[in-house]
Length: 218
Image (tube, rainbow, N blue to C red; front, top):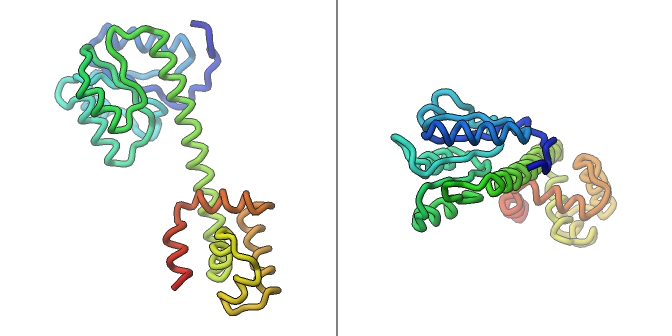
């Protein structure tokens, strides 16, 4: 129970559980481990008072009054929510468990949940969320850098990450090799990278590869 007691907890662990005793127990457990835990009795209560943007991890009971945990999760996923979710159920319901995991849940725990199992699941979920957040931030920076490139620099970028040499790019775009080198230098500077592997990784973060590739092949 003493592992990772100094967990960074700026993001919330949101618990949606209709059983008062279970809800209070989970909040107490998570807060004792320095997690920023907050609880709601139903999906409706969370929808009226909670904020999806502040969620780092969500613990959802499958069977909730009104909208079920699965239905709520599928709804918020459709609205763009991609934070890790842990489901709990008082029944070893295989079809429901399969449905939850297919929808993107990171864990499905059967009640009564062992404290260590829950803590392990939350630690793993928060780590996953942290990595996801870092990737999202890196993607935003890459897109902002990409937006500073001229049209010609974008065309050169695409061909560089495809592995084309300066001579090939020169022939394809109808410009001199010296001009290609100039554009390559500008691309590296504006994308804030120093090596070709770094440039490729930044390009991958753009998630625009196919669209850019198509537009430059014209």
